[in-house]
Image 1 (cartoon, rainbow, N blue to C red):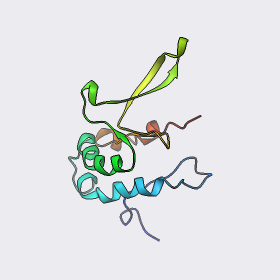
Image 2: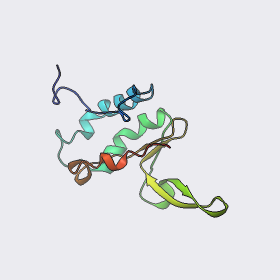
Image 3: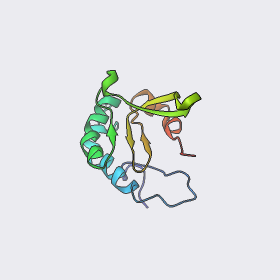
Image 4: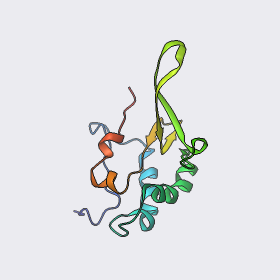
Length: 126
């Protein structure tokens, strides 16, 4: 059986009671292909922005809208709660969004990765 050092990236799909959908392997493969640029075990100084830059071309090819920069025009904003007359009252700025599969993507490095921030980034669709 392969150990954690033999498999990259380690991942788990939620809810764990169902088989991962067909879109999962290509997304995981994108992270695997970018390993030399994003694996913090190989390069301790990788930032979230650098990791997202390495992933961006393949994720866009897969149909994701990916944040282009930190300026307002480059951000990917997704409303999640709506109020009176349908106006968004809560929205998140996310690293990526796939409109067909309704997937929100957050790339964490540094403090976020060290503190297991992934649990905060899993927002299931109701």
